[in-house]
Image (tube, rainbow, N blue to C red; front, side):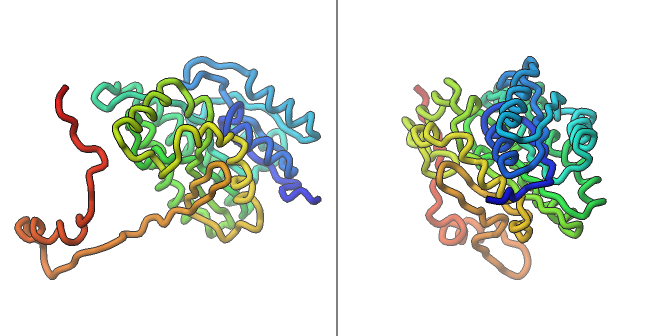
Length: 310
């Protein structure tokens, strides 16, 4: 069976564990040479260790693939440039960039510190930019490339994750624009909203939040999946879609966002407006008070209603 990515060089950030680990191994299995980037820190971004990245490199090598480790933080422009330079220095080129590195600093919005906001933004949203920009310099020159960004269903709204949600939804807008900027050079840029049980999604705090939302009758983020579903969705189940988006056969897919988890893959119909009301001139408040309840707001129910004080 031919290896569909033979001769390609891939960079995967946050590849020491979880989803990034599965992506790195799947890319290597298809013949890609892989830069395994991971600072080896805790889920909240503290600490550092070379062990996670090194272990993945050794795992790839045992399977007959080629890989090198990178320990740079994508939270800085110097770190992002160094990650891409690792691919060039070791393999002479870069063909694939999977932006996956991430941390969590969960807090209700009224308690969130500026530091907690900034740290999550730096790793997720800035991290995508810090790696994508230098990669695109090479992609533009060689007139080819694949970028897969990692958003989240949390971007659709998730309790206690204002920083993470904002960063992840920013990544979707970033993806659409990079797709436009780079499409003329033979580059595609797509995003995934992965759903899998990892050290970041199955923490005691998040499990408690899931149970609390269930008890309060709130709609699960991202659709109808439950905590039990998430525990059965393993990280490596995300990788096949990512590898597919890296192939030549996926050249027609650009600027799209996918839901992926377990055996389910969906594509979002973004950013279409689902209905309109129109008139000549400007709507008055009196007019909106009459027409909104029977048009755009018809059938809408507040999914997060106020709670009576205890």
